[in-house]
Length: 69
Length: 307
Image 1 (cartoon, chains in turn blue, cyan):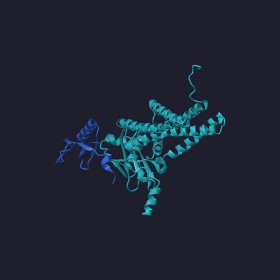
Image 2: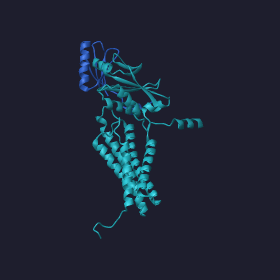
Image 3: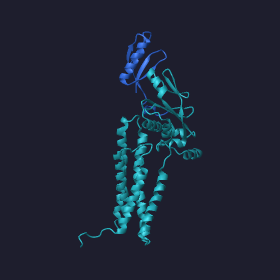
Image 4: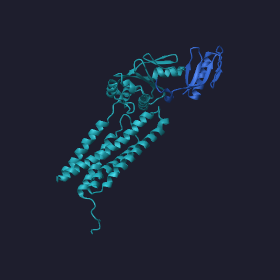
């Protein structure tokens, strides 16, 4: 096991873009917003990612996360 | 009095000092090459190191005439020089650390430490070369051999010492301990992998996926021997490799280093500004193996056998 803590490659979740079928129980410090369809979801994700210069990942259930390292 | 003041230095000593200073400064100039690492590439940086080398060479050059004139305290100058060179290391380290935030990817503390140490050591080059050059000229002078031979002896001794020290201080590079080759990048949804090894899942947008698939470059570094992986897997070493690669080709976006625990290989992936694959391979191969991560396998083995 390397000295991972000193390597600082962790990222913080800035925002999550969901759809109406997703249930968010707790978001912590992340900003959560709901899009009306997939097209809007992608658009919003890109807009937030560009604004905060963050990276994007998509979970297998369709939620987009915007991360900043 | 002829108005020129008393004679305080003989012509022989003057020649000795000039030749020794020239040899010492030249030794430093020869190792101050702007190579693939392109450091120091700034004219002012080069000037600073040349002047420092001149000072170091001067200290080495005057030490012998000083001792000859029964001025033994002059040797303390050498201690002063050592202190000065340590300051060079400190200044170099601080200066590189200040630049960290403006580079494409940070050099990392391990690489900075290595560069700073090298700069300190190279001032000793100038000092030792000029000292040995002066000593050999003095020995030849003591044998009552002509001035021409004294100069030749100084130049020869300086060259031999320079060759010996530069060979001793020459470190290995990544290409010496590992095979470096280009690799294919695979983008599946937001997941990016290189030859089956997961690299990132941060390619969530179509823009990112297109950019990585079309413009991204990946290099696989496979250690030649199993123990070489110890040095290559070191975070500082990987940062140094990524730094050299991104500084040479630029970095548009995204840069990752990953280690494959099963095979022991290292993966470097980034999106360069200039896509020059030959240069990329060269720069990765030529990245120095950091002194702080190098381990002597022979020592480890003998120790293990004793236990």
